[in-house]
Length: 286
Image 1 (tube, helix red, strand yellow):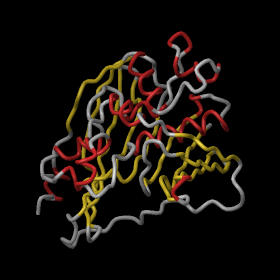
Image 2: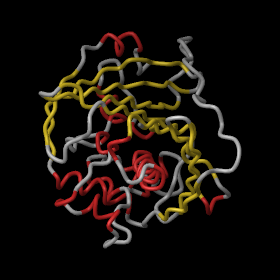
Image 3: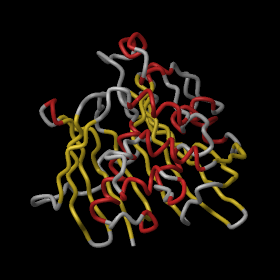
């Protein structure tokens, strides 16, 4: 079996030193669609260095290296074909407001390997800290087709939150630019699934798909801008399950429900009959 669960779980943590500048933050914000309209004061908080506020989702790309879904594949005990790998979900907890420029030490380790029958699910945890203490904790959930069936723990159900009821408090339609995946990949995720039609076809898609973390960032920004008065410092955590794919050029329909200390969201592809894109999405805030 290409995935050796015991070996992956026993692998020692890997530590990396990362750094970032305001330019990296600006690129991330542009990659998730900030700057439309370009002169809007609310958008300039994301696109002008003199008034820059860092959206917490930047933690998922800080340092510019490969994302967690790719880093998980180099852990001892994991030897799989990238074409059979999908990013299944992401959670992020921020412990402090992220600085526009800084450096940190990150530590990666596999915390779970689940047997889903027809697939394996890996969970890669990344913790980041600087001289002031913990900065953020990320969990990337990595779905590997064809690697299940060894009789291991199936893990928790995919659904982690109750489905929202009643009409949403806000509904937004966000267009995805035709070149948005090409721009977003400059933050570090060079998986050809998001740019190369031939690779996408080999992975079972009719065309390249948008990065799940791009949709994740767009949704988090929508919550901050519409329900949190544009205050990025109020975000405590964000979790989502990648229930489907979005394509460059499509429109994301984001529905938001207010709750006690949090926001629940769903994201669908408006032109494809409301096909699910993000599910079980929650943003906890102050």
